[in-house]
Image 1 (tube, helix red, strand yellow):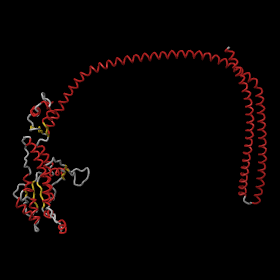
Image 2 (cartoon, rainbow, N blue to C red):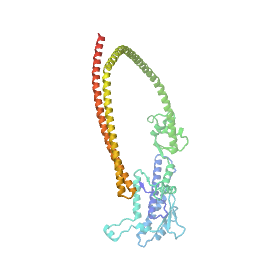
Image 3 (cartoon, one colour):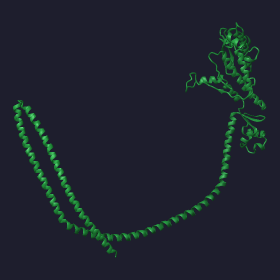
Length: 494
């Protein structure tokens, strides 16, 4: 059953009455179920099966119950909330769960539920209970629905039948605060909701009963290790074995033995589980010790045989590796000795050939040296003569140009002095012309130097060509030396 949480509001109306009645009925069902289970097992219980019956009878069972009075008053056209309240006071004021206000001006009445006193305001009680339709709807439907209170009573009877035929599960929706905000917990609001929803009463009922229940075979199989001499459940009288276990372990604590089950409190169940874990831990340690005492010698012998085999293979491997290293060392020694002999013979032959090459090259160089020296001197003389002539011509041209410029400057100064009265302006123009002429001369000088560099480069190319021809002669000499070396090598072999 999914139930919306009810509570004691500041203003309780007719809808609140139905909600609190549902919660009270649910608590009564829970108590009856707990009592029925205990009675089936022939056990005594401190829970009363008639818990909440009186207030339920006053609300919905007795002939002149509260819901019936409200429905009857709703049928009268002139019925008012005040007349309904007076009838409630008249028929139920003597009931111990009914609270009549001290003043007649207060239009309310109270009920004492399991969670506390709840006061209900009768304003609009009849209007909300009538569930009226307009004339058109009445003609359309042609039937008349039950009053709201009667509808609730039928729904409650249907709910009771459903709860009696199945095992109910209750889902509680608790509001942590009135503002619907996260991370905000109102302790008083939550406690009030739990109290008026019947949760606290449900917990009290569970604690008053025996929430932990084990069948006798399951109890024997689970806790027979706690004392000695208890066999498995299929070999023992489970009831007597369970009684023996409880008497030995739990002593005079609160537990009961039913017809088919053992009933325990939460504290006794936790104690049995802790004791069982301790006993199992000790027995497991003994079992581990025995198994290890049996397995370790066998493992040791197996390890010993394995280590002997590994040692044999390892020693064989080490000796084979040493033999290969020694064999490789002798082979390397032989190779080094043979390489030493070949290297010694090669060095002797190389020294002889090097000496022969030195003598041959010296002879050839001495033969060609005078010719090369004369050629170099002739080239140097020609180049120096060419450079001196070019330098002389350039200096002569520059001197002539400079004299021409000076002459031109004098003429310009005279002409400007005649044409222009301002001597400063004439001087500036003259200097400008002089600078322009100097720039022109500088350009011409650079062009002359460039031509000289080109001629020098040509002369250098001529010298390089002469050197290449000299290399050709040297190449022929080298071939001659190589032929001599080959002949000497052949003579050494023979």
